[in-house]
Length: 314
Image (cartoon, rainbow, N blue to C red; front, side, top):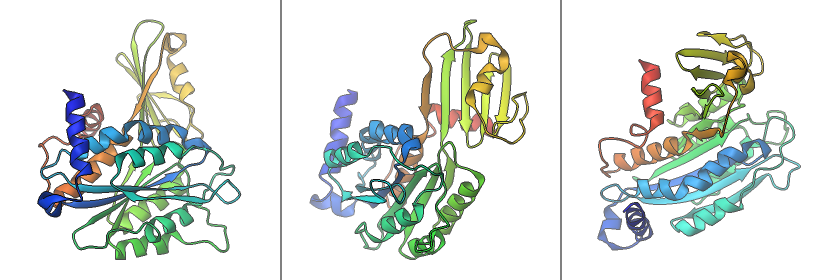
């Protein structure tokens, strides 16, 4: 049944360009602006693994939205490439193939060529300029832009132009993004009426004493839960029971070892993120604003991540 539903969703997406329903469907252009340097392998893999499911979920709106996807991958000067463009398309197989070509490599120093990547995403993607079309960029990265290149673009100017062109940038901060990067990502998102959100990583395993352990990393804070006990660490200072550590470099192993040898994994560690939920939810919101109707429960609300965030807010 799930496979049948997926096929129906793909059929709806592939027929967007024809028929009266396509003319009435909300139109959304989506560009993934991906930091494709060596430290981003896990995040890029999530997009590769889940893109078909995300597209299928988005296509379940009534009417099904007309969505095109494109990619701008960027690295840094001196790498194999600085930016690489994959044009906007409705062809699901082509989108999957394009993602498959992107491998995380290069980088070297910490900042990357985000300024140039953002410029390319805004100016070279042949956006649909018609009124009523939602234009979204998902910036997914773990490092700030270079601000020391003399002949570079400026993210502030690019964000201003994006706002003028009606392009919304949603910035998703991956693990490793520092305070400067967080500030810049928030500035880009806010300036284009988008949102900044941290990518959340959750690892679950059974400890040697048989109890389940959950390690949750969001931004520069990690929370370790085992039974009724909780430890937190912020930016890698000492792990504290029920509190926060001091600033420094965070190492997840410090949290695991906080409870002693019995907290070490006895078997396989299962790791997941909320990246696909963040992307799908934002695209569905844009489609809903254009007239598509979805079930009351959003992708995020029906996921374990939504439950975690709800518990955190209470």
